[in-house]
Structures are given as structure tokens and as C-alpha cells.
Amino acid sequence: MFGIDVASYGETVNWSAVKNSGKMYGIVKSTEGVTIKDPSFSRYWQDMKQVGMIRGAYHYFHPLKSDPVQQAREFLKTVKLEPGDLPPVLDVETTNGASSATVVNAMKLWLLEVMKGIQQQTGKKIKPIIYTYPNFWINTLKNPSDFSTFPLWIAHYDVEKPWIPSSWGEGNWAIHQYKGDVRGITGVSGVGDLNKFNLLFPGAKGTRVREIQQQLKDFKQPEFDPGSISGDFDEKTKKAIIAFQTANKLQVDGIIGLKTWVQLLWYTPPVPKPPVTPTAIINLVDLPKSYTGGFTANQDQAIKWLQSKIPQATLAEFAQRWKKSQ
Image (tube, rainbow, N blue to C red; front, side):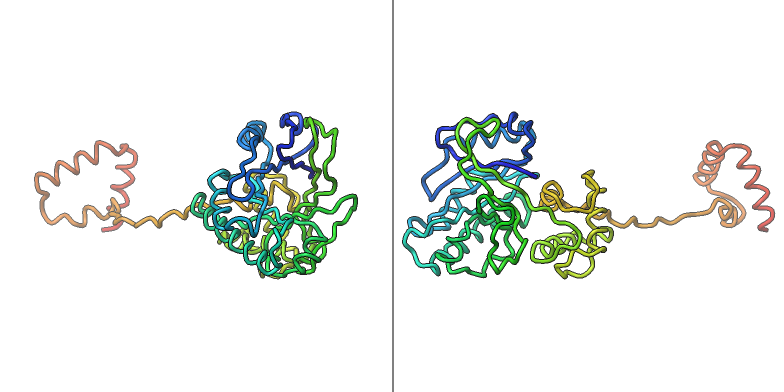
């Protein structure tokens, strides 16, 4: 499941051509710091929706130059997520001279503010994606373990299997940016980056599986219940995924691909119907039992109206049953 990401550095993108070339998703730069907005973002964002591509937006993070909460708020003003979109992306690849601890704390502030804003806007608890690259994360940030439950987008070029920080664990990446500054991408005049989504197959283990199991559990629908939140993609989890895919008209294969993952993020369980309050029922055969020698005028009128609405065959059967009940 392949896609591209771009920023405005002089290129233009024909998203219809990108999609027709087999790319399923596109991620575009939206904001940087507090003051910079990518000039092509609004157009790209609308174009991707129009051609039916899964779309995502990233924020280039400056941990020291500007307040992280203000950066988050500018991102939320610029990017209005809709069902079917990827989670927001925090692009972390510079320190601005800050210590690793300062960067980590600033990241937490941005992430919390964005999650709060998304929940206010959409009602969904969606965790942003963290974008980084191995050398920066391990050597500059000192391999922090604070973000292992957030989806990871790792930039590691020209390798089949990217290096993954130990806190996430081997194989627990969501997106791999495997080539950067590529020319000749269909639909892109200029450069872009190539990406691959990490499918989750039965038998997988780790934080990604655990997060999805929790999502399924939180839906509180028995057919989607994965059992224990173990981080093990076992048979019960596969059965729950198949039920979810079937109910949501997705490809039914028991594999968590991009479309299934995105649908899990945005799925809204049906509102339970309120229980029906039973009403008192009077059996027709019991009606004559209330006869005590005469009906009132209103009762007599009601009986005649009722008789006019009941087929003669039914009345005849009623008469027989009533006689037997005496």
C-alpha cells in the first residue's frame, strides 16, 4: 500500500494522475512553526478529497523557536480532518538547539493539544503520527520511550526493513518513507517522497496490535470483541477484524490494511435503540368477560366499530372460541 508525501518547493501535483498510478494516499505539509503555512496545502487538501485519495497533513515542528501549544492551534486552524483522513502528523527532525528533554516535553504539549482539538472538532480520540528518522531519534533525542503508543512514520531510505526505535519494537511502524526527493513520480512535477504502509497480518505482535484491539473493544459490539488486549494478533482478533470489515463493506481478508486502519479510527458504533415500553394488551376473547348486563352507549358504539373492522370469518372463529371459554 504505497503513497507519496510532498511540500511546496516549486512542484505541482496532479492528484488524479498520482492515484491512477497506484498510489493510495498522499501526505502534504500544512504548517511549520506558528507562522508558516504551506501555500499549496489548501489546494492539495481539496484535490485529494476530490479524486478519492486517503489524505494526511503534517506539521514541521520547531520545539524551541515557538510555543508548541500555539503551533498545535495553528495546525488545527489550518487542517480540518474529516472521516477517512489519516491522523495528523508531527514531523520531528530538528531541535533548534534545545536539549533532548526540552524537545520531548514540547512534543508532548503539541500532541496533547492536537488530540484535544481533534476530539472537540470530530468527537474522535485520534493519536497523531510521529515522523522522524533513525539517527535523529537515537542520537539526538536519546531514544525516548514516551511515544510508543503513537503510530510511527519512519524515514529510512533504500532499505526493505526500516530501523525502528526500541520503544516501538521491531516491525511496529505504520509508514516507511523509503525514498526521498524522488524525481519522476507520476503526477508530480518536481520532487516527492515515496512511502509504504505496514500491513498487519495475523500472528503480528506489539503496540500496533494492542492499540487496535483496544479500539475494537471500545466499540462495545460483541461481534467486534477481540478478547484480551494482549498485543497478539490471534484468531479471535482476526475474527473481530473480519466482522468489522464485513460490516463496513471493506475487503474481507482479516488483514489490517490502510483502509481498515483508517475506518477503525473513524468508526462510530450505532446508537443503541431504547427499549420498547410494553403496552397493555386486551385479548379480544376476554372482552365479553367484562360484560355485566349491559354496555354504556359509548361502549356499545366502540363494539360496533370494532366489529366493522374485523373480517366475518375472524368474528365467527372468535364466537366459537368464546363459547368454549365459558
